[in-house]
Image 1 (tube, rainbow, N blue to C red):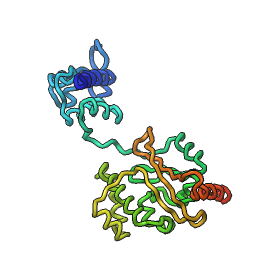
Image 2: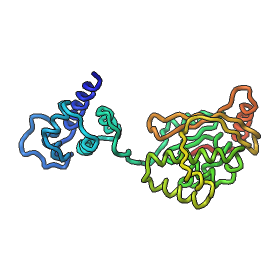
Image 3: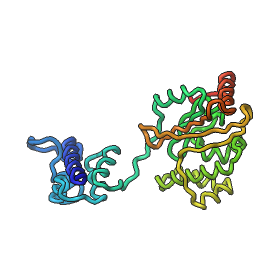
Image 4: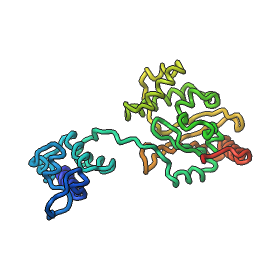
Amino acid sequence: MAGDTNMNELGTFLKARRADLSPRDAGLPDPTRPRRVPGLRREEVASLAAISTDYYTRIEQGRIKASAPVLASLADVLQLDEDQRRYLFSLAGKPSTRAPRQVKQRVQPQLQRLLDDLSTTPAIVLGRRMDILAWNRLAAAMMVDFGQIPAKDRNYTRLLFTHPVLRALYADWETVAQTAVAQLRMEAAKYPDDPRLTALVGELSVLDRQFAQWWAARGVASLTTGTKTLNHPVAGELVLDWDTLIEAHDSEQSLVMWTAPPDSPTYAALRFLASWAARTDAPAQT
């Protein structure tokens, strides 16, 4: 049965991970005598995790299911990385009890190359809190020169409410902005204690009455697909379909692209805008 297979795999996984750790790695004194097997002993793992050796042994042998707090403690003792931690909890059929550590997000070079190659397709990369991590030349020409905006302020929702160019760009700004607020609330659910997100919400709530109203309404929405109409000062009206792809290296990075059907007026307008951006040297990310 699948449950038995997972229990056996969980035990094998734990055994392999404790074999990878030396007593010194785990903060224990170096052994005075040579060991028959590498790594930590069961009793050492159990002691560090504050559970009995018998209880740990039964977990490793697949005879009992560990609780989420015990799994979390074992993950810490065995110094599992985030992928290993998710795998451990997945085998046990339990949600992780800890949000992944927030490290500074960086766009992989191959993703940036893809952005740059999309010469006739506006595209940006959004990260946590809907921060704008990367963009291509056409996205800068279509929306705003992101390179001229301080990195700390490069947030899609923030710019919608504070940048006059973006407020004027969308034909139905209120719908776009309200949807962005709902998407931001989905981000807040992932990391309720994120100080940067808390500061962003506080700032926008003070600056804009509508933001405060929509935030209080607690609407939620995911970043998926849709259609937007833009009134661009150079290219004219753009009716664009947008789609979202999740980056494999970091599931909290989303590639957002705007396209139009071939032979449509917007399709031609995008190519005109791309040509104009190239002539005026509208900047891509550097």
